[in-house]
Length: 428
Image (cartoon, rainbow, N blue to C red):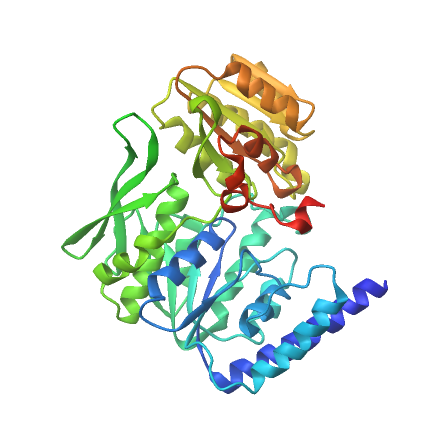
């Protein structure tokens, strides 16, 4: 009770300070919403613009009612330390009276419960509203009456746009494309589908070394009559193609040349825990997707795994959390995705993930193991791995699947650099 009251007081003060900062400095704001790819898209937009404007982004995935004010104020989370939160309040007040402030903010804006987005746009005005994906069953669906209500809540970000604001939509997502029908705002598009106003991508191919090691994926970005190649390094999957072209279309609309944008993005690294290519022990190719999980994200991850040129492909899957009444059905669907993508080796960990294994057995998937622990899952991967093997590790945050990736890493000294949840707070 006391903790809840303290949290509300802290949020109220930080929000008030953030409102003061926005009013005083008037930065242009880019909002990013959707159930998949928010963090990657926010990071990509930041990298696309950082050499051309003074810009700030959310740290990690701090996109909540507390995380967004912290970003605006340029502060770190205090986690469970009252001392740090009190210091944040003091430092936030100092920002209100500072002389310098970024020209632009790119804010990842998340929704966990009904009303979250409405609260954010009640005090934040946007110049750009970027939407990623609206899946049939989004993460956090357990807190809403209907799964579609999550998408509707995210869609409210559009109404935070200024009168001259710009709507940035994924042309491949039918539910997001429908937002254009409800809008009078200028709309620009990105995706694999070609639209008149925007960018589209083609020619997606994985890159390998001469020794056959996977290193990334090549894409071709098309705008008007021009095409530009780009290499996404150390990660794979369509979930990384979308952030790149979303960032390009936003930057182009702002007035930055696409070639200059891509030059700025040469140093861009995909956020950790999101389809990163890591070198595993005994020559295993690890695809680490352990930040979080949802039905659409699992689909994209399995598709990416299926396209890797290796003899054996192993999917190590943990629970997809926060799906509420949709959980059993959505986990069963994953088994059918495995079969359609011809992935024959499955390790599951968790009571919900075991539903995948049960269904997989019924539909004839050959190699299945329901692990009792992270260690058990690791041992089965080692048993199955031989010759050329690629291993996808994925699960929701609560499954802590990064522990499996860590155990399989060739160089464990790099864990803090390449894996999620490696700081002292999570190690506890």
